Amino acid sequence: MSVPIAAHIAPDVLLADRDTLRRRTVVQVARELGLARIHDTPDVHAAVCEMDTQPFTALVIALDSDGDAFDLVTLLRCGQYPSAASTPVALLIGHGQDADATRLASLGVRETLHGACSARGVLDLIGRLVQAGGG
Image (tube, rainbow, N blue to C red; front, side, top):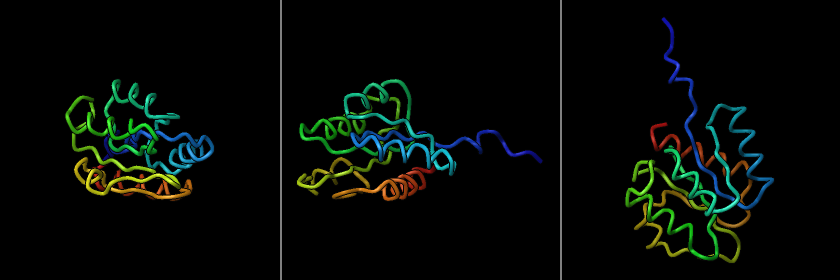
């Protein structure tokens, strides 16, 4: 009995993060492990372009100083993108950044990573989001 091809296809995950080294490491390791197909962008604005073109199983977005990450998640939850409004989302929150827990909860942000996030931490986070999303 053969396994359907769809069973071998890794989920599509969007990673918007200005840290190039971490982003590239996550992309490479996720590919090698078969964890996910990571679509990486350097910022939220580039992520919006990706969001407009295809659905994603999960999103990992680095919080920006302008609040554009919150706008992206708000539009996702309102059904403005091909991804399901219930798509699991996590935010990377850097040193000195603050995110209101009430706002995060209202946007359905599943998890946050605070401070200096490692590539391994982001990969673990992606694994949890993909599993939660049924991917």
